[in-house]
Amino acid sequence: MALPLPDSNADCHTAENPPVSRGYAWLVFALTFGLMLSDYMSRQVINAIFPSLKAEWALSDTQLGALVSVVALTVGVMTFPVSLLADRWGRVKSATAMAIVWGLATIACGLSGNFLLMFIARGIVGLGEAGYGSAGGAILLSVFPRRLHSTVIGAFLAAALFGSVLGVMFGGVIAQHYGWRMAFILVGAGGLLLALIYPLVVREPPPQGGAHSARMPIRQVLRELLTTRTALWTYLGSGLLMFIQGAVIAWMPSYLNRYHAMDMAQSAMGAGLLVLVAGIGMVFGGALVDRLSRHNNQNKLRIPMLYALISAMVLLLAFALPPGTAQLLLIGLGLLISGGFAGPSGSAVADVTPAAIHATAFATLTLANNIFGLAPGPFITGALADAYSLQDAMQLVPLVGFASAAAYLLASRHYRRDLQRFHPEAAPALGPA
Image (tube, rainbow, N blue to C red; front, side, top):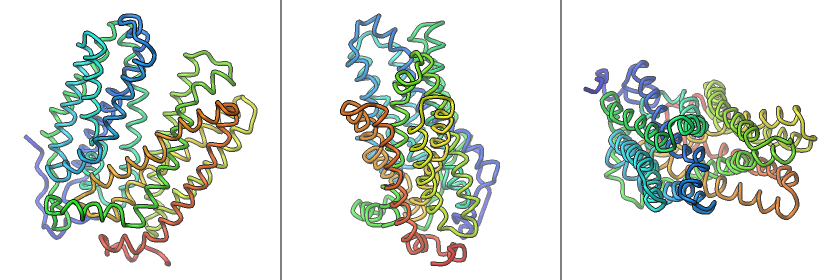
């Protein structure tokens, strides 16, 4: 049976006073975070078993790459419609259904007998994962006060990076001892177990703001998402910083191999550690923004602007240095600082959109992160590396951070007006115009 929510007067159901206890909120966080780990473990476990699949099924590298890309493609295509459905049908029910789908599909990967069957199963994994980050983020916003939103969303999104590393590590160890099929089955079973527990503990949040998303026409949803200036500039700023993270993380194994003389295992491990550093930056960067925004809400966007500027300068310096320990430390520092944008960006977008469409708002932010960042970042970096060298390409990538900082600055200039539409109680903490 689901844990009961404390009785509360409906007038107290505000962003600063959610109708739940602190213990319940953190329990919801733990389970939602756990499902996000499962999400990315299911997505990335296949990377560890490429050699086994290639040997057993005689697959080409193109086929192996397709098994990865089909998940990202399905997620990209389906994120918005699935998140819109979650806002209308119920976020807890939707998150549970999504986790069951990706858990069963991951197990199906382990039972596949050929490439085509696994390709189909991997596509279904992507379908299950398409709206989870958006629905999970919206669930967390409903149980935590607004003053903690950057911290909570940053930590939640960091689970994607932690899950990616765990998926590869766990998959490699299990595949080595018990075979590649068991790696899929155990990862899928873990997600399935969490999915069955989730609705027994987490209650569907009550409608906020006196409106239910089912009553909001699609045209109005799009207007709220695409005409609010704070949100638009935040989409761009977040996407451009994701450009840097996506490019650096994607090419770091090759960079370490070519310029630091590391073998494939060492370069993979080094890149994995840098991914973890970026995840830590998401957690603590969001927490710092929450702390510094208590007396001036506009810091929620001004500090990510500083993250963008400082990380760009640190990474520019790092890639100007010769290969060595100092360079690696500065790259780690740059990723640590740049990761802090994730939580505040999600929190700011939620602040200036109706609570009834928060999952859809997060889906739009995710779409922007992919369009402006994750999709073009690795590709453009590779094209520059072909034209010049990977060293030259990595020296140019951090320049995008200055454009990101400008976008966050413009977002902060509209934040006061847009925030007061949905949170008039925040006016005393807005600081000077």
